[in-house]
Image (cartoon, rainbow, N blue to C red; front, side, top):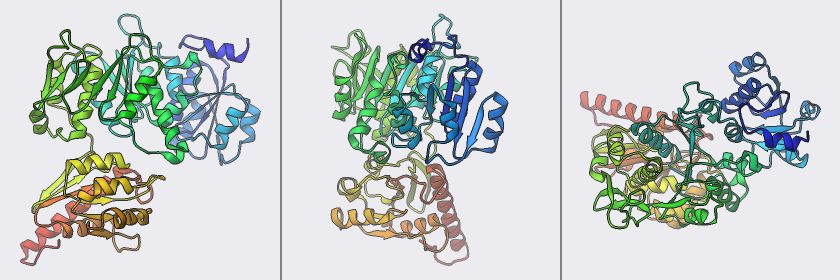
Length: 512
């Protein structure tokens, strides 16, 4: 049997995977999940990685795979000798990586872990004998929150739903969960979508519903251009069966839906903060409503919740409301009732580092939005907290901040610039917002970076106000992750408050 013919037949857990030679690139949580799945299926597996956690390195031979550790700047001889029939790459490998280029030049099938998960999705079936439905979620910002929201709303409606994918839980782990699920809510990064864009028809996903929440420049170095980044995001709508949910306030997402090759009968469902049309969800007089999944949608709407109720549980920031509307549309496409959505939203909590108030003291509110790792996310935070002292900077990933500073950053009362790429940020303020006072924290500054940041920011607050960590940049230049950056910020805030309290107690002035 020709290899292409064999691969076309591999669309079930119960297909003949035995002896298939598969090279797995990368040994993070995704790479290990991939290797573990393939060995369980009976494939012959070679894992290549520059480094690996001790636990994964120890387990690879235990599960029956082979591990080669070392530099991957050139194609290893072990890979050439293995002669893989399929290469499955972790999302961190860009299209320009030597191993990816070699794979495509050799005409070898190139998959991501999500395609493998789709092909074996029938391992555990629902009560009706069918595999779980898939809902796909992407966007420059809001993916994780919307994925968590959607799963929460589905569970509230009585469906067993699992958030997975880029959210940190490999899709293959969800597919292989012996308990099974009715719905997989799959967060997809642009990297994962790029790999899905390479898939042959046999490996293409057919989701129940999909959304691209928004689009703004990000990961341009990985993709090579804004056009390539947009093209990758657009793959989320391909083959959608029921609902293509798009952002009415972001024309790029509408164009994606208009250009997508979807299953006949799939509907375009819009969301934004305005009054919804008959196929939309939106807001009317402070009430979130559904006019998309409603028998009399041309003449009336169904109430989901209110902005006031969302405010009472800390979910009323404008971009959070948009995420809630998108998640509600996705849940409604699977029949979740408005009352179940309402009840679930009363107990939903945002993850840490997503517009999280870490302290309020002495008239200053300290807000951690370290997850705002690109300009689009930071702009949303600045709109939620106009007049804040803005902490900005880090690894810009090739993205310019001029537009952000000009339009959203110019509303800040002051700014503290951090990170490796400080000069482009400082230049953006000089050019687009010269009226905004700016302080710079350079690596040579004594003490912990965030201690100095908090000290400077506190001194720039005029009476009462907000200090907002919304860096618009990745964290790896100075921190282990955006979570580490946020945790260090919160710790520095607590230390600053404690120092002020101690000074007050002994009669000396507080340091601000």
